[in-house]
Structures are given as structure tokens and as C-alpha cells.
Image (cartoon, rainbow, N blue to C red; front, side):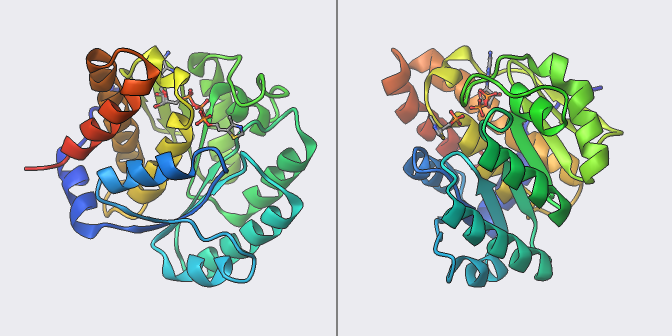
Amino acid sequence: MQPDLPDIPALQRLRTRSPLVHCMTNDVVQTFTANVLLALGASPAMVIDAGEAPEFAAIADALLINVGTLTETRAQAMRGAIEHAVAANKPWTLDPVAVGALSLRTRFCQQILSLQPAVIRGNASEILALAGVNSGGRGVDATDTADSALPGARTLARQSCAIVVVTGEVDYVTDGERTCSVPGGDPLMTRVVGTGCALSAVVAACTTLPGDRLENVATACGVMKRAGAEAASQSAGPGSFVAAFIDALWREGRA
Ligand SMILES: Nc1ncnc2c1ncn2[C@@H]1O[C@H](COP(=O)(O)OP(=O)(O)O)[C@@H](O)[C@H]1O
Ligand SMILES: Cc1ncsc1CCOP(=O)(O)O
């Protein structure tokens, strides 16, 4: 297993292609997610209505499904969007926020696993819960380490035929056979809401790139880790971290 560094040509391609990323994400992280995607050159759009979301999913280049603030109504809209994305051959990415302890989102995520996600990105407790190994973390936070979740991540990848990303001090990206490890970042990333959710959006953007999807997803993890480390070294705490993080992403993949 090799450590993977962000692939600069892939980041340049992201800027050139500027994929349209349909984000059906939670209420807490909407603006942060959009700013992270914009800083990297992607084009975010948060279309959530059950009438419009399926229509837009077929037009967009990639779809993100994040269940952080799921409701029955949103679940219905998300299912429609996923079905239309799959029919249009567009990749979709699942962020199973707080799956395990809560029944609506756990049931929903288990159901949509059969709709061929390209990637599943979660913290260690979320991935273990989705793999059926444990019952989830503490709300949206992990109570397990990424290292301990790696066997479960591999199993989940084989079962779902998706690439699985389990994040933490080291991120692991696996298809069940091959695994990349992505070290770096900073613990301050866990003291700012939305870094994981925004990473899932960047992963969704990177599913649109040509080439090896596993490597492109590892690049998404690497760029966020690198920007996180840079921002932590420049900031006085979580508040200034956010601005420094977006600025660091803005510099990535530029000539
Ligand atoms: N201890 C840590 N050291 C460095 N980076 C971390 C650490 N924990 C999490 N990260 C990074 O923070 C981001 C969010 O990861 P994580 O906290 O696991 O997800 P979530 O926000 O979904 O719980 C990822 O980019 C991850 O690599
Ligand atoms: C606090 C919170 N509550 C529901 S969703 C959410 C955001 C979680 O974001 P992240 O796990 O990326 O920090």
C-alpha cells in the first residue's frame, strides 16, 4: 500500500473541465461545500426539490448524496435523483453521515447501496456501521480509527462494488482489492464543521475525471489533506482556518 500524493495534472484537469456537481447535502454545510468546490474550479449546484432533482441529476456531471439532515421528503427526492443519475450513466457518491445509530438514514443508506454508488466516503464509524460491523459513532463524529475500519471498508467495497473512502488521521481509499493511503492534514480539520462533507463533494467532482478512479479519488483526499495542513499552519484557530483552507484550495492545480 503506497501513500498517495495529490496528482497535480488531475487537479488541473478538474479546473479545465469544471464539472457540474449536483449536491444534495445537509443544511449545515451547504455554503462551505459550494465554496470548496468553487475554489477547486468545479461548479456546484444544490438542487433538492423532488420534482427538480431527478431532472437535474441527469444533466449534472456527478451527484452527491449526503444524509446529514435527512427527512422522509428529502429521501424521496434523493432516490429519484439517484435513479436518474444512474439511468444517465452519471456517477453518484454517498456520504452516510451518522449512519448506524439512527434508523431512517440507516435504512435509507442500506436501500440505496443497491443503486450502484461510484464512491462511498465516510468517517471510520460510518463506514463500519454501513459495513454492518458496528452501530455507528457519536452523532456525526467517529469513535473508531480509520486504521481499524480498513478491513470493514474493504468488505463494503467488495459488497457494493463501490470505491470506499474511510477518513481520519490517514485516509484510506479502497476498491476491496487495491488500497491507497493518504496521510497528512491536521486535527484542526475535525474542529470545523463540514470538512468531511466537503471532501465527499470533491470526491464526487473527481469521479468525473478520466483515468483511474481509485487514483482520482485518492487525489481528492490528498488535496484536502494538503490544504488542511497548510491552512492549520497559517491560522490562529478554527475561524481563520476556514478562510485559509479555501485560499489554499484556490492555489491547488494552478500553473
Ligand atoms: N486526526 C486527523 N489528522 C489529520 N487529518 C484529519 C484527522 N481527522 C480527520 N482528518 C481529515 O479531516 C477531514 C474530515 O474527516 P473526518 O473527520 O474523518 O470526516 P467527518 O467530518 O465526516 O467525520 C478529512 O479530510 C480527513 O482526512
Ligand atoms: C453537525 C451536523 N449535523 C448534521 S449534518 C452535520 C455536518 C457534519 O459535517 P462533517 O461531518 O463533515 O463535519
